[in-house]
Amino acid sequence: MANALDEQAPPSLPGGVAVVGRGGAGGSAPLLRVEHLVKHYGGVRAVDGVSFTVAAGTITGLIGPNGAGKSTVLSVVSGFTPPTGGRIWFDGRDVTGLPMHRLARTGLVRTFQLARVFGGLTTLENLLVAAPRQRGLSPLGVLGGRFVWGAEERRLVERARALLRRFGMASKADDYARTLSGGQKRAVEIMRCMMMRPRLLLLDEPMAGLSPRLVVELEQILVELRDEGLALLVVEHELETVDRLCATVVAMAHGRVIAEGTMADLRTRREVQDSYVVG
Image (cartoon, rainbow, N blue to C red):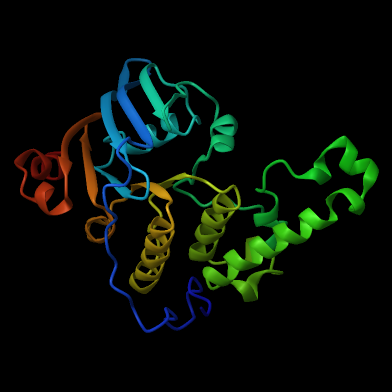
């Protein structure tokens, strides 16, 4: 794949633009279960009793107008922000209140609305820093040098280069991350998450600021990841993208879930229509 997330590069999906499809129902038990989730900021009820599930190997959409509480839900589920109430289960384990770094080690990771990269590192280095439990960071690794961590480093570099090729950014491997375009920085953030071998990836508005062509190309990559078994929970304002990607969509307004189903079904629901019209 050529530079798929370079604003100036031509479309590069093999065989042209592929049709994006939805995942199935996944396993019998949900990978993620959120029950009666609550988050208050003083007197503001940003999230007010939200419940939903995400099955393995599926993409679930989380939609709603600005201020609905979508990003707050992602922050609480990912451990970035502690909940005020409710429970969160991941792979059958109660993970309510666990901090973000501990959840990431279990396979639950997230991105943010604004792409965050280490500008003074190269694109390749940005990916390598995300790999967990590297031997070179241990006391034995420091003392033993390459004899201890050399083989692991070579494996990590190859995995990072494979991701760069997949996202069409192999030519950017040695470029400083601060020189990348907005779309490329967003891709780096997703690739950095993939270096952690996630089982559930939470994406906060991944299509924001991308051109229509880049949206289609990123959609295709997300579908490929889903087909390989990755579960995704996606907050997205572009409803056409949600329609193409998501088997199940959860609609929120005023911190609450107001409807759940396919995007086609939600478009006909009066409560969903009203939430976008009157907020």
